[in-house]
Length: 445
Ligand code: URA
Image (cartoon, rainbow, N blue to C red; front, top):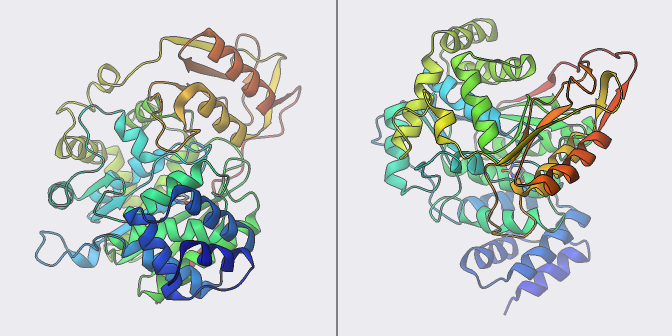
């Protein structure tokens, strides 16, 4: 009889696992016959030993099949225009999904989006949406389908129904230093994506201090792994390699990042790199869906739907369809939880931000209570960091590095020390941050 420890031992010793061994382990993780300790040992063995592309594909499909795979036959959607997006994760990147899904829906794409919670030092879409009162991030399957039909797109997390194996394994990876692994990220992302049966995928793969992949070469390896596994199951994809050497946008956290999202959608404030990335992703989705023939026209359509308020309208409808307030977009500030201790962090010297360790800023969020240190830990959705000065910005005692939203003064002091050492200030500017999209990989089937 096969035991979980046999599978762990084989991987620990660097041997390739068969499809049935992988399925046995993933099924056990889902049903609970494999313990959290065993999941931790398995993910560490995979982290250290890697997997062949066949193993990665088997792992992904076993994770996808741990739950229901959506069937859109009979649903009121155009199945040829079902295109999803995802990100391999990055500090500040999680808000991109909340912008892309409603904007793509406004352009005529159908987007059933299964996202994740915060992982290690990166916040996650599902935790962000938990900050919206009433929003159900794990709705019954029929409600999710209805929300997509009514709105054109909806964002939820893995449920008991959809990719439940990822839900189990994700929490353990989060707290066992086993996030930054090409096979584990491929399985985690693609199992969620393939469970909603899209016809095409756009995935951003970040590299730099704020991403799991620190180098562009590692990001390329991850992108190729995901593109190849998706192609094996007949799903064409576009991988956009992004520069995450600094925080994306102006805030990190949950409630505060939802606020940044709403401000962006209604046009109150739009960070230039966020705008470029959002339009790039939506343009690829529009072309994959066959709505426009080329990227220039697709980007024009996306920009118009953002400007005319259609994306903000879709976001509001999505919130409503999944149980949130009717007037969330109009009154987001009144609904979102707010931290009691909010203070700016002045720079110790006058100059310009020339570099930042975005991962360390993500860690500061975890220390504030906005990310997890133990599986299933409850996080504080109100804490966060806002007004983060971008690379190239002038800073001083009066022009702060950022604003911290903390539970108390002690948390504020600890986080401000971490942030000061994470942001490098020099007397002269070295210019603005690099363009957000570095290159792309297109994979047909
Ligand atoms: N996003 C996911 O959904 N899973 C990962 O492992 C990393 C980023």
